[in-house]
Image 1 (tube, rainbow over the protein chains, first blue to last red):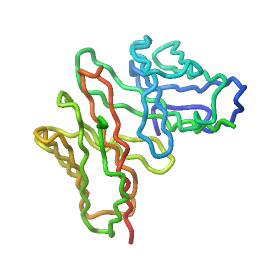
Image 2: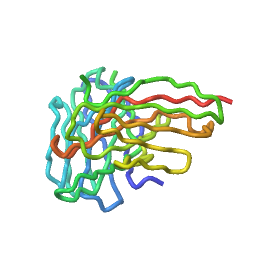
Image 3: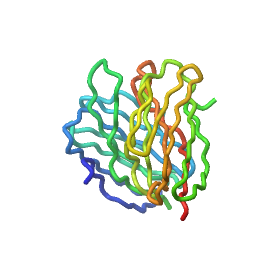
Length: 116
Length: 111
């Protein structure tokens, strides 16, 4: 039983739609992440939130908008996506001890997104 | 050069055989190393951390070679259930304490 849940598990949307992906972690962690995994490519880190503050934004297009209302919840708002945005979107969480280097991440099952 | 590089495979392995594969990393300041396992259409899960002295967990052995900047994973007595993609993951505090993932090595264990 994973401590990180994601909804929906599958999503099909048109390019003009607005949708949101939701992630919830039940592990008491203080850092959460969004990753994109496309076919035959490594996981790409999109956003990092630590202690509810966005600490990293890896040049992600503005049609992706993250939101972290508290340390247990993370959203990814989607707007005017392109077909090339079709991918598996993974959420992860970790305990982020300040100044330490160990950073095991626990992943949710992902949302498989298809943009038509 | 990619930050973390892996042979994509697939490595076709007879059941019961031993398989080993490496992962190279480009940032010499990297400090933490992990192997994650990802089954088809599932999320990655931590398989094992990799320590400087090398470590073993059952049939799995991980090694770190800092001088040559690579880590390795060896699987002994392969089981059909070992079929998966193995992701090499590297953490560098200098790079913002984030994990960088390799593209994965696919292993197929066959009867």
